[in-house]
Length: 256
Image (cartoon, rainbow, N blue to C red; front, side, top):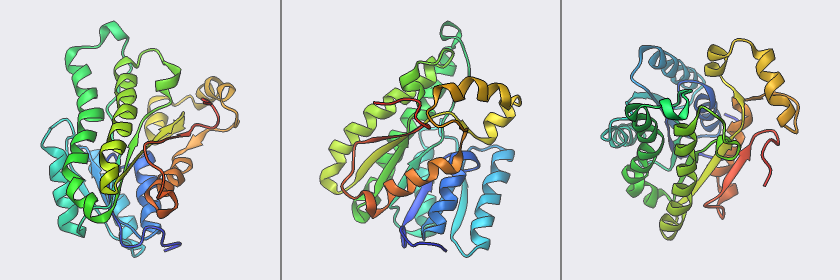
């Protein structure tokens, strides 16, 4: 272990198979937290999540992987129950999982729209509900994930950007409502982050960089570990008087 900023804490991280979620799981473990890595019920994602958990356990940490379909309203409670059974009361929820697809606004089907809202928005709310009693006991923290697309209005992502706008509103309301219980609620706003999913979908990375880098103040691609520190800060005592906030991690693309 390195530092013990999260010693004794228990984190449930959705979308933890790869990318940002996996980077957060590794960093949380390195800082003393037990981590439950939730993944979609897919053989590929299970294999990746299991590998992250095995890696953490091999280094002396504590990790499990849990399968769950966040489009199912019963799933968040199951994820919370399984995490608690393994490690005890939850002190950190990282609602990182998201559904997305590039579709022109008037070609989005009702089913596609509902899937994105259910996974991205409803599941975040249900995770908060399911973990509420634990978080009260632990004086814990909820970290949601929005997107720079809320600010940039990227074409082809109406359903996704709408869901990520809703996440900001949810974060602020939950911060108001849960603050009296000692629970903090904040959000991370990633910019254009080079994840495994992006590499699969956009193999011409030179072209991607040509499009993105002129928009950023920092002229390099962001990677998952560039995000992990913000999640560590928001989960730790270093941010004990911070709630209802959105932290931009986008290389200086969007500036308030």
